[in-house]
Length: 397
Image (tube, rainbow, N blue to C red; front, side, top):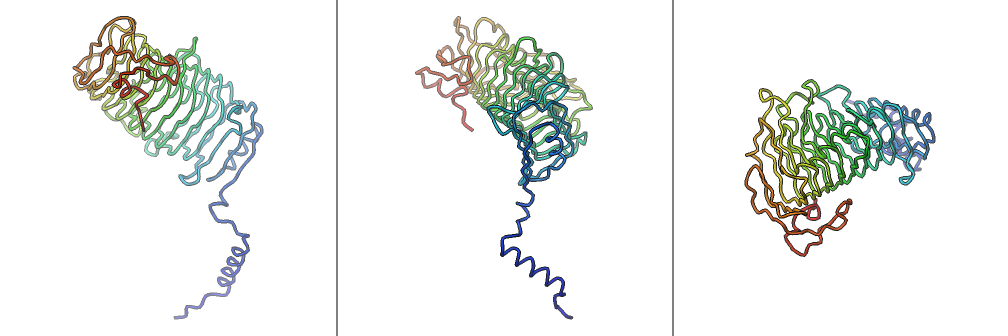
């Protein structure tokens, strides 16, 4: 059987070799890369239609309005689509209307260096497009400012439904109605080095909420100041039809809150129909009513009781406003919780915490002498070496 190469195939191979040798043929990966400079709303809408894996859309500063519905826009893990403001100190503004951005069924898209303000519904919305079994994967939100969303009711700064393998990094939230970040059926995500600051006139139910079957999420190295009635809500009360990817028997599972700093809030942390969530090496200053809550907000015939939470290595500074340290609701399993190695200091009396179970290795009434106690960089200045082993200052990744 003849194995001769057809003439036309041979010609194509020779031409390909000559172009490559001359440097005239770009590699496939580089061919995908496309930078688009944008200066106004029309330019951004046109760029979003052209975007493909590897595209970087660069936004000049200015007012871009609102209402960007972005559907089925997908990069890849190796070639993300990036939408970024050019000047971090003077980011492009997306303002008013119901939402600034709504990403639906998008994958491996990064939104970076933008400011979102004064939206009446949600600042930014990202979801799986209703395809519950195929989550939106690899979304990233970086160095975004979100402010003045709502101001009342279920109006979220960043609303995420059905996201997997996502990151939220270096973002700041101030003034919102429902949650600054609300997650429904999200998993395998990291929220890192963000700030959450409550404002007068906004209802602000929670700073971060993970519910609707959310699991394996890490919240770390962030700052919460008067960030809602529950600064972090581990679980919640979700309509059964909204659970993703399917109805499970917990609202939140295996969510970890680590290395964060909290100031104020009625309850900095609430475990609500959650299983196996961890709160460790955080610093809490002046909770408004409770240090934490253990609640059941779903019926027991469909859900496990709230259980198996861990509260360890935290530094808590409190005063007479805290009369009940842990608010325990009915139908929960507080006896399954673990309290271990926390340091407690009452700033206006010698009053030790009353907890639902005995704590092991607790430290009581050693003044941490916090530096910048109301700010994001508060650190313990106590000379007692035990203080340096607890709280946010002791956390390492």
